[in-house]
Length: 498
Image (cartoon, rainbow, N blue to C red):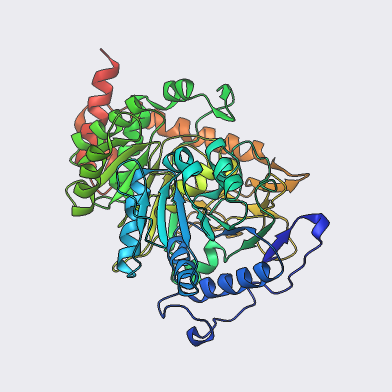
């Protein structure tokens, strides 16, 4: 894995990699003792690049890899040497979250937001991008600016900030260095440092192991596109259906009952319907969104979630990027997306470690793994444009993707047997890199097997006419709460007959 990529005309090459680099003793760098070894390596690479004259550097770290902590270490170093530093975010919740992290690390700071007072005597500031743009003309440029969620850097407001701060050292942080349209970020950054992979961080116990399920694979082939992704109205019509919502409730009950988690919906109405369905089955769920709610209401819901009053959040356009939601074990993906950024950011919410956590449970009801891979899939990130999925290290250039037809667990490895004991289909689907595109291989056999399995399940359930029939079927399938599943199926069956 290349640690640094530069523009081709600069012909910069750095040979060492995170995979081959041993942990660095904390005493080797002038940073806090709590910094992780890979953060220290990134700081070392940044110092080398800045010494070489690079001023706009993109740093790639997986979700949960400690981007804010890395920023804090960079801030402390800058302030120690008499420099000013600014951290730029795109939501009010993120200014609050970053401020809390700064306070924990004894880093005094001021704000540039529409709701907080600005004190120019502080060398460190946290800025909301919209407010910052409106005040650029009357603010002094910092020596160091760190741009959070830097895959947005090409957008209008961010671009204005980077242009105004062109004399500063600009460091972008992201887990997914790619724009929605797949175009490159080489217009915004001159070099890229790629940190450790998700699998490395799992192996190091910095991130959580996981189980990945795909109970449903919706047909999105006829869904129109808008602004590079599926059109939301059409997605809602596809996904906001009683049997699909019921399936999400069923699999949460069977695989993650009682665990804290996040549901990702296609629309506000879909999210509210999900929250109502989960709550009706005894799984208290709050709807939260970044459009209709003010920040005070969102803060209250988040505080209730952190306190355990709501074990589940159903979210639209809020939690996908940057926002740290603690204690998440389960992800219920109900929004198909063409965006690799959305997919990686959303499933990454479940990978943060905390005491007592064994593994994450990810239920991809949107089938996004078919197009984007899984949590540990690797990508050939490039400043020049769209990433392609890269296979496991070795002679193969493909990612084997196997979906169990018994329990619907998905494997992103060459394993032939599912953890449930069932054998994966002999001809399974793979994602292969060909000329920069993700191409389906041997898809027909897997699709036909999936179709037959789904028909068999539907026929089994169609034969059930009473609660006791559904309850007996649930017991045969090994569900943890046969009675609750039977009640849900009977209510859906009654509703369909009206």
